Length: 297
View 1: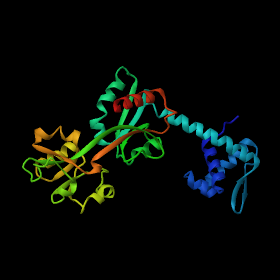
View 2 (view 1 turned 90 degrees about the horizontal axis):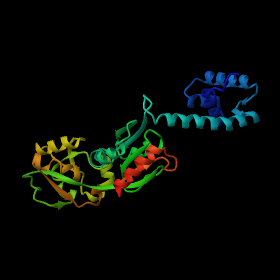
View 3 (view 1 turned 60 degrees about the vertical axis):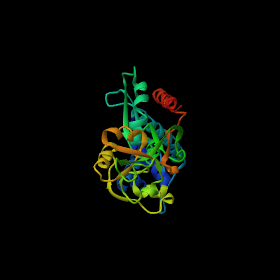
View 4 (view 1 turned 60 degrees about the horizontal axis):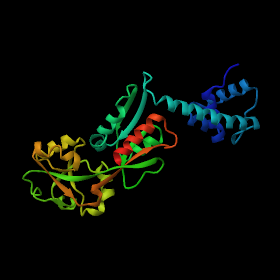
């Protein structure tokens, strides 16, 4: 006996939910005639009428309602199977996908990743660099398994756990008019050219976040995302920049730079680890989350 066809079930479910073959076809990215043909084949295979067609669209028969309920469960099982397989690399090794913002990758992950991978020879970890505002969505939609982001509060739609805190400071070259200051507010530095990026990554998002603490927008003539490159640009006199303090300290002595503490409240950042569902993780993810939370403690 020919088995039920998953693409046909997807089209059937879409037709029931959309109450229209044309809308179901659009949702499943096929032409309407193809959608109609797949459902007709499904009805022939089951020897039952599944949909009533009328001028307003379609509606399921009692047999169609039963199939719709079972098909939803089947498609959910297929989705879960695909997600489970995604946790393995192409050669069959166990794999975890972890997304974090650049400063987390540099400052906070080397030590816990070394602990996690020690003795685990058949495990692969994909570390993906992403913006903090994207990471919870990536976890929620299954693009990655775990994420680390910074924010004012835990993101909605995922399970989040406190991770680390850091501060950003202002980096200037030796001899700069501000170099003698030990601390200041960013507003005190707005007479000078600043190099991007800022917390929240884009200037517009940063101004939405911190604009009330600034009397005017900063002058930004050059956007530099890489921290080391940003510090080299500062050394060459191309501007001053906001840099995480822990990263900036790696370059101060070698490049002749000065780190000034920022007094603005937004200069302290709170980082969170997030997963889609903390109650439904495989053992590897559970172990990695435990190590990351120990690191936080």
